[in-house]
Image (cartoon, rainbow, N blue to C red; front, side):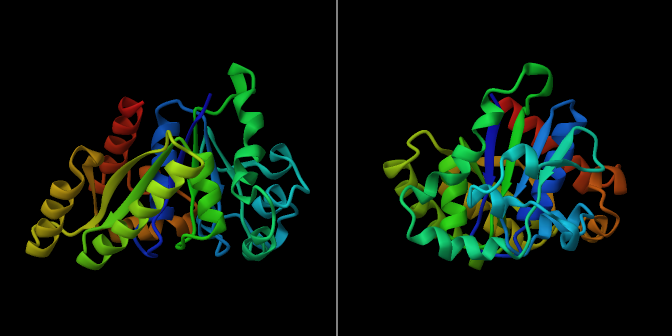
Amino acid sequence: MPKIIAIANQKGGVGKTTTAVNLGAALAERGRKVLLVDLDPQASLTIALKVDVATLKRTVYDLLSETAGLSEVVSPTQIANMDLAPASIDLASAESELLGEYGREWRLKEALEPTQKAPAESAYNYILLDCPPSLGVLTANALTAASHVLVPLQTDYLALRGAELLFSTLQKIRSRVNPNLSATVLLTMMYARTKHGEEVEETVREKFGDAVHKTVIPASVRAKEAPITGESILTYDSKSPVAKAYRDLAEEIEAYG
């Protein structure tokens, strides 16, 4: 069965989408079959993979509204071994439409059930859920469906305060719907040799201990440029420090189990 990883943080601009694309590409490079699911109405992940949102006929909105199945929504990306379930602005409607629905947190988990029964030759090894910058219904769906949550955390004190709120939410998800949900923290956008970044890293490692990945993702202009081409950093600038970091992260994720 695939390992389902929600990439979540209610703070925007911490590297969720960048991590989804590049971690997915790094896992795919290791020979794993990967599905990316865009749960953000801004569709940043979809756009980063050079999908024309205006031409989409089916999106994750249709999954959550139960008007389409997973096979009708998913399509290949230009990255080998990696597929995408895209988003569009319609997904914003799901937040309000699902509020009054019974069992609303379970919609995504139910929609992903076909991946649990797929033949070995076509099965996904990893499903990465790119969450919106909020703790609403869409993120709740991701945390209910996932077996693990990866929390990108910018090396900044304000971002650290937001992470504490997210971990409080995770405790509620564990107690109510998903008791086996595990979590790790990924430090992102680290500027080398800055006192502030080093202090934040030290604080995060003291607070969260072994839940913090050894890999730290460096700040990179090249990583911001890569989506313009629809590539991951692994092909856009394969020998860069940030490409190495995402390869190291993929190795850690695989070892984590």
